[in-house]
Structure formats: C-alpha cells, structure tokens
Image (tube, rainbow, N blue to C red; front, side, top):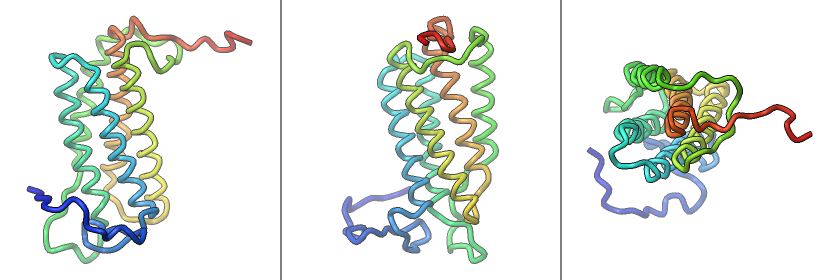
Amino acid sequence: MVRLTKIYTRTGDAGSTRLGDMSEAAKHDPRVDAYGDVDEANSSIGLARAALRSADPMDASLTRIQNDLFDVGADLCVPESDTPPDWEPLRVTENQVSWLEGEIDRLNEKLEPLNSFILPGGSEAAARLHVARTVCRRAERKVSVLMASGARLNPAVLKYLNRLSDLLFVMARTANDEGRADVLWIPGKDR
C-alpha cells in the first residue's frame, strides 16, 4: 500500500522529478509526459463517471479502469532495466487487456450498427466519455513515442491504452441510448 505523509516535497521546483526507481528525470521527459497523460485520462474518466447515474453498470467498470490506470502509471514510472529494483515493479498484465476486450464485446453487442462516423456528443455522459476517449488516445500516442525512442516498456501498456480508448468509444455510444441517440457525421453536409 502506498502511504503519502507529505503532499509537497519541493524536489520538482527545479524542473525535475523522481521516477518510481528513484532515478531523476526532467518534468518534460517523454516518460513523465506519457504517465501525465495517463493521469489526465484517469481524471477525465472521473468526470465522466460524475455524469452517470450511480446505478449505471458502467460506473463499476469505470471504477475498475481508474484503478487500472494507476497501475499503468506505476508501470510507466518504473523503467524496465537489466538491473531490476529491490522490489517487484507493478506491471500491467495481459489479463487487464483481456478484461477490456470482454467489456467491449459485451457492450458492443447491444449497440445499433454504425453506418457513419459519429460526432462526439449526445448525452452529457456520452460527451464526457468521448473526451476521456480522446485524452486516452493522446496518452496512447505519447507511450508510442516513448517506445519509438528506444525506451524499454512493457508492451501491455500500449495494448491497454489502445483497448481502453476503444471501450470508452463503445461506452459513449452505450450512454447515448445504446447508439440510438448517436449524432451521425454527414460528410460535406454544410458545403
């Protein structure tokens, strides 16, 4: 269990921060940028949850996802190394990815088929889920950049974020009366 006894440490006042392995990195380091976007995605999901009815079954799934996103951030903040730390770092697992796939399949089978792209919006909950989806896609892109830079990462992190953004899309459609209230894109409508 994590124990936070002091909220401010002043270690970041000069523009650097400590990673989970206690190494130092600039606050603009691609790794810090990636897990910062994961944190923002988590906050966006919290905002979406606030628009759902508390009895909505998606709320329990989103609570689990928020917890998993802390796992994603923990995974990203401890770089993989040939010299592992004295403890076992928390890593995202394929089971977490598989659970997202199961949720996508379960919700998607109830949705109206798509005949066009949809505009992000509809109900308040759907609109907030679309915002969370786009923030999650940004986090996914940042992790992809980090991987392309040669940083060693757990490949399940990128898979998790990819599936999560897909699930948030399906959840947004579910929040729009199972897709019946989706607003369809009409190409060239206002030319």
